[in-house]
Image (cartoon, rainbow, N blue to C red; front, side, top):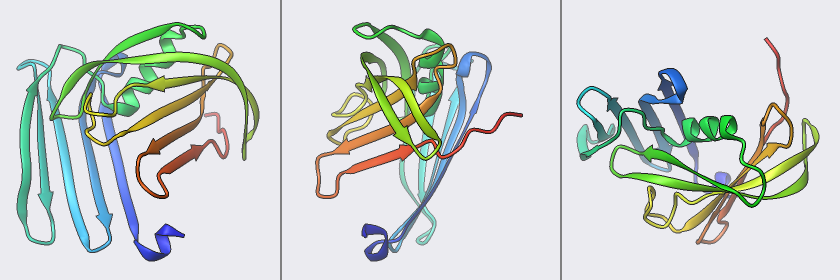
Length: 181
């Protein structure tokens, strides 16, 4: 319903080195009448993440920033990929170094409990996890981020849910199919 009133077409990509350490991330955001391009470069040698957000309609720089980072830092998707390799059982937590180019934090991810999740790709036995990256930790918006990974050796992410504190504030992404190469 919201997309009929307010068009959203966002494209996100990230590049990684070994261990899912971020080397670059970009977001092309077309939301309503606005069109922004955001790029983050993770310079491991200099120990900095460099953030640049441009307004493509006005051809201007909206924000530029940089932050000190450790030799291996993760952006949000790389952090989820790294978390899969750590595999803490329910009731345990892990801390993962994350940056969006403007902030850096060791983000706590809690493995909360086992749940069965139904997606278009099937029904899965999972572990629900919460990534504590909102509310000013990495992202300023208030909200919660949940990730469901299969409770097996694959630790495949089957669902991600963002609960934001505004009307129509929940976004759920579900696995629709699994392809093996």
